[in-house]
Image 1 (cartoon, rainbow over the protein chains, first blue to last red):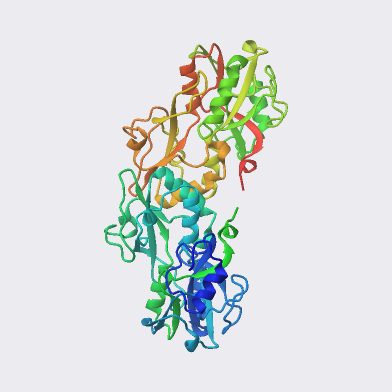
Image 2: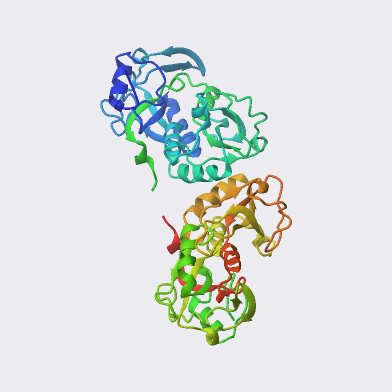
Length: 263
Length: 263
């Protein structure tokens, strides 16, 4: 039984032994969880450039040292990236073709692994400071929206920035900006607050991904760059092969969240 | 002729020799300018406590080591606090009774000098980052407003928080929050943005102090705690004697603005 006090290694081994295939939210509290993108070497250089040019939606935590490597020692001991997440998605030409507990049979020597920061780390820092995270209070997925903000393109990768939204009072939003500024590798400070239309969002009650949350009187919507952004860019780029985590089923790393803090 | 390249000591000596009695905005660029409050020892402990309890509107830079001291070596070489500002205001029982180029004839052995941070330092940091400061662009004093936010009281000192307002786009406001968070000794991060009514401001076009500035489409008002706050608390407390700088006529210190940065 995995809990918030499980070690990251125990979570990964439970995934490897197919004893766990759920979402990793709340497991191994205090450790960085990462978005996974695996691409063939032929597409990897462009995707790396896309991440470098769009660090807020695509904050790179780590890349495998060589194509075909299944471990990344700097982020997780004994890692086998082919089995150590609860669930994977396999895309062909940008289309989802399978949801899998293990990708060993699809592994190739030319695959490059990208790990990107996710919002769980900054949400933990905000909660620790006493701020309310509405999607957590309401027990739903964070609402996410396509915006009119275009990412900087790189080769075949381009697309809109996707943002997640958390409503806050202005005073809490100011504190959240301070806290998240310490964590650029997990999306960093918000990119916008207030008027949704200013970034091309027509209706906050109709998120493109996730679930709507309530906004109380005196609160403003606060928008963070979101890790769904690279997924849209990949869907548009239609690489011959791409493997990602299933939504919410992240890689639990051995890196303490506090290690990502700038200061 | 004093300019932005004058040294702080040259500004102070020009004041001492009564060759200059204007505002210090723009002089000796890059150096901290300070608000001045001088109170009798009988009121100093309460005022110190008031500053400690309200650090955003009353950020203490320095206090004289002993009552009667006219220098504070840590902030300014060869300082004579009785003459080294362009202009002073003398209050009796909270009432302005004189505007003076020099306070030597009113000096007493029981007077304690307080130096408080001012917004010039953070405005310089924002400008250096490429942000626009509307009151500077429009060549007016920053608009300031009484709010419904009560300061924490200390002895006879109490009153509302006064805020200054600078309009910005949300993206610029987020950047300004990051920059100002590095400078807690000059008011630090904003205390509010957006709806003025949420902090008791009825009409942005009618500031209580300073001048109104234009707010462009897509901008929100951003509010910082303001150094006029302690002046109102002093006016309410009605100390037997109080001496301050005249508006805009600050003490120019030898401290580089960058020395105030937390990181």
